[in-house]
View 1 (cartoon, helix red, strand yellow):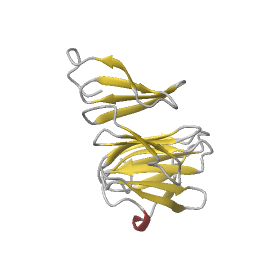
View 2 (cartoon, one colour):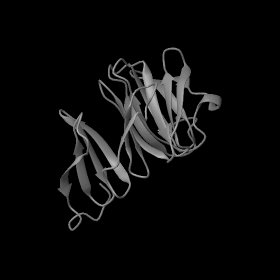
View 3 (cartoon, rainbow, N blue to C red):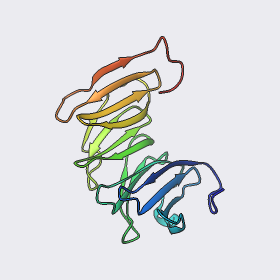
View 4 (cartoon, rainbow, N blue to C red):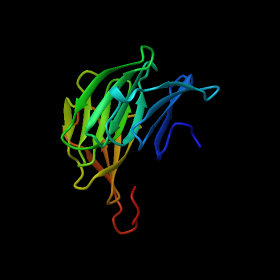
Length: 177
């Protein structure tokens, strides 16, 4: 059991260099730990954290920033070195997943919208490639894969106007992808 967390941990991610790992939870907490000792390094204060359950987090490629998303309809970016929140960005729908790539910051809304942007402007571009909520996001060598609650998987390549359907498995899969 993790001291200080009263509800579920929804996501845990190591920084790319392994120096830290972060957890985000249903009790609105973001906690940064030492990657070698698992000692708490920083508990993000409630004043700058989310106001509802936090579902996902992702580290920037330079290991300095941690992006988090929540059912409070915000994407927040924390500067882990400076121990500050450097951005609070509002979305029309609760957000369920976030992912840093070398060139962009992606996030997914519960309504099924995939957003692409930057730390400063995370909702710069948007795609609506699914008709039901998107449940998973993964990076590939050529783009981003998204999966939805109906078992459909789309692939989005940089510069493409719309995602391409790569898998449709409604008959076989009854579980969320």
